[in-house]
Length: 340
Image (cartoon, rainbow, N blue to C red; front, side, top):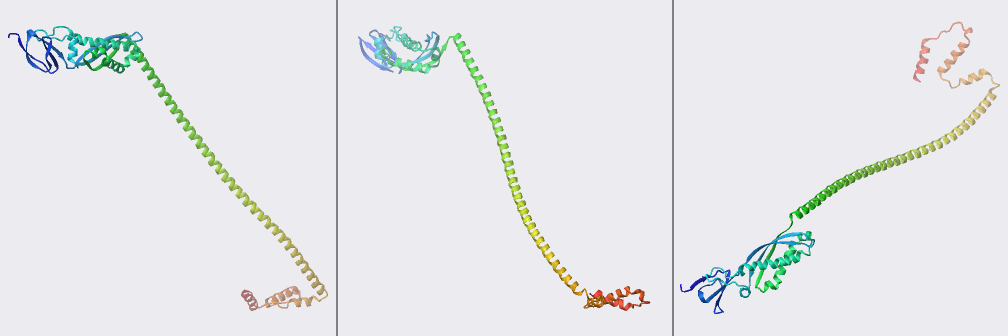
């Protein structure tokens, strides 16, 4: 009606109302009426924006890679951006009057690609595939310090690299190489495990042999100890036998001396007896046998005297006609002999 319109601005949008070349209203989340024929509205989104990107770049060893990531930014100074790019709304108040709002994300992506190309051209393929974190740090630092970005009043909130991929042919070659490396490592692990097993078996065999050697040494030591003990026992036995032999020798020597002494004493005693007997025989050589017989009967027992009488009777049997001996006499003699 008569060119008067109502505009409601979202909290994530910043509006600048120009009238006669002067800013008459500015802010986020405003609601107001304005006269369209004499008013220009500049609407700048100040919320965070996620911009995905995919770059095809070449590494230092001339290998093509695909870098996929996402850039997050926000307009920190909308008035500064409005002076460099056209964010003016069309008279209808719904669309932009130019393509600058669509060019802003592409401008940021282009600068990001420039930084990415500068980082990747100094890295070989293998390092580039494994240096995504380092690349993110370099790009984020480059975007925050870039004069092109700061002059637009843009604040880079974040940058992430989702993937760095080589071409399919290169990827297959790397996969084959990695597969061969993994298989080689697996073979080396198998060989190492076998070597460890052989080493363990060798250690076990060595331990068993060492144990057997130790056992044999112990047996030898025990046998030597037994032999030493037996030798000591034999030595003791020999010493005992030598002591016994020495004792026997000494005893035999003493016996010899005793026998010699006894023989000498017996000889002397025999000589004495022979001398005495010779003297007695010499003394009685002239004596009548009857007298000697009578003298020999001195001190005899009655039985002995009777026996002597019987002997004499036996010697003169031819002179005796008849001899009667009573049983009482014999009984008496026997009883006396029994008593003795």
